[in-house]
Image (cartoon, rainbow, N blue to C red):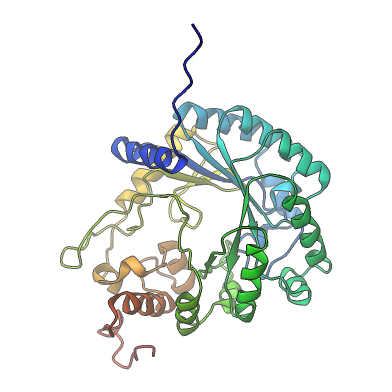
Length: 377
């Protein structure tokens, strides 16, 4: 008797079911790993670039350490694995890492700047295709691109890489960060991305660099510029898939938790030095995977993050528009010196987004504590 065909299911339905089950069982199903801080570019906004220096490379996880972590991820039932950097292809052992993860059965997502693709890399990926490849595309103007990356010729390498990718048959998409230096380019970037048959999406959030340097924030758009873009372009404030489960609450009964974004639910982040946290920008609590197992690190970090509470009278504690806010406690600590403090810029942006949804003016979150605060137009 011939074998019956296996039943099929749409990916979105499959993903939703897995996330729902993970929420019920409080199980980690997604991981992001920065396999290196090395990069062939020095983008002016990049939060990892301070460690893109030869003196830091010996601190990065070895191939053996990475394989051991992958083994533990597979044992835990982690399904989605995002490999990022730095620039992932700068590791000479990248394909040893990639193919080991591929054989483990992870749904692999790759983040790359797209400037180092060669036909050999494309051919190797085609043999064992990733689930998706995310390409950073912040400019399509040669002068602006090279100035932004601080590497002459990087734009030409990017365009060569994109032509290779265009004809590869590999699954890929673009991500754009809208900033004050490329804001006039957004329509042109959109046309470029759509010429590949891809959907244009952009984000606007920028974070301090990992060493605390705030210079990356100089490239932020103003709240008014963000609102103007969001009125005319497709804004992607998160991935298509659910990431972490955000607890529901009302302004009349706000939670005391410092992290309200759903940190410490179903996702982990591992930096290039093997330090585990709950997401890319959560550095309030970390555990070294060189000192403990993946399971122990998750238990330790998740319980610590869940236990963090507001201890001050920060306006964030009772803010009624926090669902529109992109502040993270780690960013607040780096920008203001206090993880509980509001970041005025994020308050301004949250207000413009909340007013757009409400269709009417709202009171600024800091109005009560800043008597001379003026609501942005």
